[in-house]
Image (cartoon, rainbow, N blue to C red):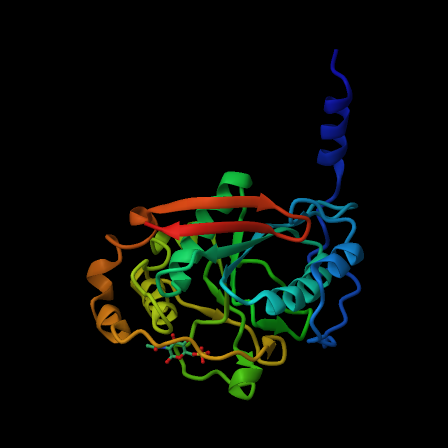
Length: 279
Ligand code: NGS
């Protein structure tokens, strides 16, 4: 009575681990910034299902959740998905792309949306690695592997077109970063208190330091990102004040104090779309 399910599991177990360095990486990539419709991208990526992918012929080394805070950037999302799926597939990762959209009303809260994405992704699968990604940044080099080192958090967007391909300041930790589940838990995730533009990534960086970890950075040829243009959001006038009280807040404000209401969670072909209300 041990039927088809058993043999499928056996097959899965017998797949070899994917090679440490994925074959066929190209290094520098062309980045296509022309807007695409979701339908056109869906046609291109027929092998995707429910916003997730895994390599056919080997077992991926890590399960990676790509988390994207989102609101009102439809054209960026198309460009992003079109670029990212090809990029991630070539890296032989098992991954899911989570687009976490905040409902209208309150100011945009990037850190909060990452925390929600983190929790909701773990309801789907036992992800090893979380890549925290702005929708307007596109990696230019596929040697920039989207996995998480187990010993320290990683900063990926170290050379962005937005900053003439330089790090804007030494402790900058925004744009794209990657943390294991253990690392994300060790700092209680992001603060939920940063509404509006700025500061949440600096506070997040401080949390890493307070947890006695340090940030690993890519080398600048590899950590290069093209940037899509947009109007800047309104800066949060309270950001420096919240940052200055960050250490006391770290264990009161974050994953362990997160309260949210899911308005919708849809498994689309190209991504998992979560619409969330802050409560
Ligand atoms: C700093 C902000 C960061 C932000 C960085 C780059 O000044 O949150 O600029 O901004 N810190 C504060 O405001 C305290 S960028 O132009 O890339 O959006 O990430």
